[in-house]
Every structure is written in C-alpha cells, then in structure tokens.
Amino acid sequence: MRACFAAGLSLPLQKRRQQLMALLKMIREHEAEMLAALREDLSRVGVEALYYDVILPRSEIKAMVNNLRAWTGRRRVWTQRLITWPSSQWTEKQPRGCALVCSSWNFPFMLSLVPLAGAIAAGNTVVLKPSNESAVSTALLVKLLRQYCDPRVVQCVGSEVKGDGIDVMQTVLKEKFDMIFFTGSTTVGKIVARAAAENLTPTVLELGGKNPVVVTDCADLNIAAKQCMWGRTINCGQQCIAPEYVICHESRADRFMELCKTWANRFVPDASVDGAMARIGGPNPASRMAKIGKMLDDAKSGVEGDQIICGGGYDVTRRMVEPTVVKCASEKSPFMNAELFAPILCVLPYKTLGQAVDLIRSKPKPLSMYVFSRTASKTRILIDNTHAGGVTVNGTLTHCAHDGLPFGGVGESGFGRYHGRYSVDCFQREKPVLQKTRGLGFLGFGLITDPPLVYSPPAEWKTRVARMVLG
Image (cartoon, rainbow, N blue to C red):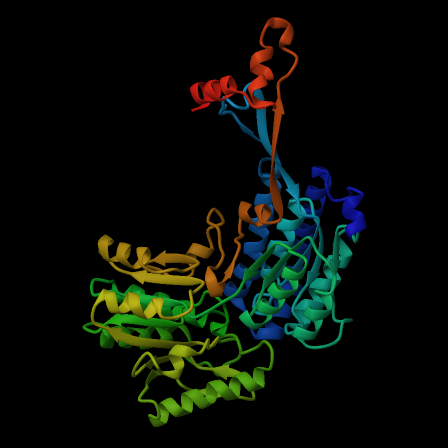
C-alpha cells in the first residue's frame, strides 16, 4: 500500500471520486444484506439500524463526492506582509500516505465506512481493520470492499488474522503507517497510542467515557426524560455518546425518574420479545452480562443503597437487559463509576449548579455532555466550566448527527475529529507554500524584492532600517 501511494495511484481526483462512488454503489446494492448482518450480530432492526449504518454513511460519502475539489484543493492567502512582499501564498491539502482505519463492533458499517471514505477522499491508500466482535457484519464488509474497491487503494484485514482484538491490533501495529484512525475502547486506544508514538505517527482516537446529563430546575422534564431514555436504549446502550448518568436538581429528581419510567415502558414494552431492542455484544459478552447482572442484583438487594426505579431484568443466555433507571445513593455508587455500555441510566440529585460542575470535573473528560435547561445563563455556566468532546442542549446525541460539526473527544475520551469535511481534513495535511516575486531589479525595485539588510555582514544602518521599516 505504501508503494501504491508512492506511485500516485490514489492521488487523482478522478480516482478518488471513482472509489467513493463505488462505496455508494456497494451500500445501495447490498443494503438488505447489511441490515440482515446487523440483526444477526446485535439484533438491531428498524430505523435505528437503517439510519446509523446505512443512511448516515451514505449521506457523508455523498457530501464528500459533491465537495471533493473544495475540500481537497488549494486555499489562497491574500494578506501580505512587508517582510515577504511581493509574493503569492497559498496552502495545499496533501494526503498523509498509507492510513490505517480501525473500527468498532457496535456500529460496524458506519464506524468503518465514514473514516474509510474520508481517507480515500483525501487521497490516501487505506488499510481497514474492522472489529472481529461483529463477525457477520465484518465478514460481509470485507467481502464487499474487496469486490467494489480497487485493491491498490483499499485493503482489509479480515478474519484470516486469528486472535482476539488486542492480538490482531498489536500484529497490525507492527507495520509503520502514515496515519492511524482508531475507534474503540480506552484500553486498546492506549495500545494504539503507544505504538503510534514509536514512529511519531499522527493519530485520531475516538474513545468513550461516562457521558453526563444535567437537568436543571427549569428544564422541560418530559422532553429530558424522553431524550435520555431514547439515547440510552439505542443499540442497547452500546454507543460511546450515550447518556450514562443524569445529575438532576433535587426538587425535580423524583418526577424526572417517573417520566423516565413512562418513556422506557413506551419505547420497549417487553424487552424479551425478539427485535424489541438490540442485545449485548462486543468482546466477552457473557462476562459483561455477568458483571451487569451482579450490579443489578446488588441494587435490588440494596447493597450499596441504590434503588431501581424501573427495569432491572436481564437474561444472560439471550444477552438481554431491560431499559433500567437507577437512583444512585451517592457519586461513589458502582453505577456511577463503571462505563456500563448497557441500557442503564443512573440518576443522582444535586443541590446547586456548582455541585453538578464539580462532579463532572471530578471524572475523566467525557466524549459528550447533555444539558436540559430553559435558562441561557445556567446553560452557559455548565458549558463554560466543564470539558466534553461535544454538547447537545435540550437533547441527546444529535450534535453528532450534524455533519457540519466536528465530532471527537477530549482528554481521556480521545483526540482528533471527523464527520463531514472534518473526515477528509483529518487524513490530509495543509502544506503552506509561498512563491516570492523576483526579477523586478531592472525596474528599480531590486531593493524591495531582494533587500540587502537581510544579508550578512551585520551593519548599524541595517539595524536602523529594520527598526524603521519593520518595527
């Protein structure tokens, strides 16, 4: 793949557009197979599966096709500086080279195709390493990409590489890449970052964390509860931007939890029915189910003082967890300190906004934060005094759905950004170029185009002129 990039095979805009159109054709012709694979791997069905893994990547790739020249072309810089005048200057978008894209299992098509398309649009050759944990979706994706894409531009690390996710990742990272884009857990993200540091390879890490929700004393409680339960039940709570815990004003916490219960029952009347909601997946699902089950059982027995408001049921064999709301006794509750990746929403009352801010700042910086408030000043306090990769006000998840906004983490939740034009930008470097105007000496402008004061040897008159002209 490095040789293909060096030969310039991925650079022409026509070639990039051709490969992007091939991805669109692939999605269009195999949509039904993709949805069937999602159902097989995660029991994801309906609009949720269609939007996240079909519509969203398709719309992003279309935007790249429509804006390819603008997003990858030159940008003129018109301002002049005395020290460089006369000159013309611009920046050029240059692809990184051979890029590695590592995707996650929870949205196997979206998290593979969006960064893959960005790397192609930027002019790179790409090695894609999809997750081994979504076996059916990964097998289909690898098969289709090998069928539709030029192997000189796109290659896949498929199921022929044996081992768990960490084994395969370490094997792939023994090779030197010019860019690494990783989506997944913090544990594996640290492995990627260490390997990238050995070669000073630029890296984008899209990780996760405990995403907070703040419900103020002036919030619309019904929409807050509706949005929180909707965001928490999508893909069985298995998304890095899902609301994890709610800090709700103490005067409204009980009412908020009752509304959450109402919406949970409306969204998922019976979680045991096939297709009612997705199932727990990913690495070691049995182990994850056992851990989640123990936490729920402890809450039912009042071990930590936590109280289950609704839900709490689970089935280890079927990897099913009911939408659950837990009232936490304190910020030390196990529900408040574990990244659950399950449809369990934790609620903790607060007295003042200062307490809410302190609690959020005491935890690792999250990928997303959500604020429900009718008062602009209270919203401003929360946004200004906390760190998060992105924020939605009076809603959940939706700041990530706008392809005009960059999506990415901060601190422990990752670094770098993508979506829309940012998916292309992260795979290319903006190189500055300045072209000096010369050859005006015969017109008497030689002192301007090639001033002697910049050359040695030093002289007092040169210092005086520099102070006068440039100072």
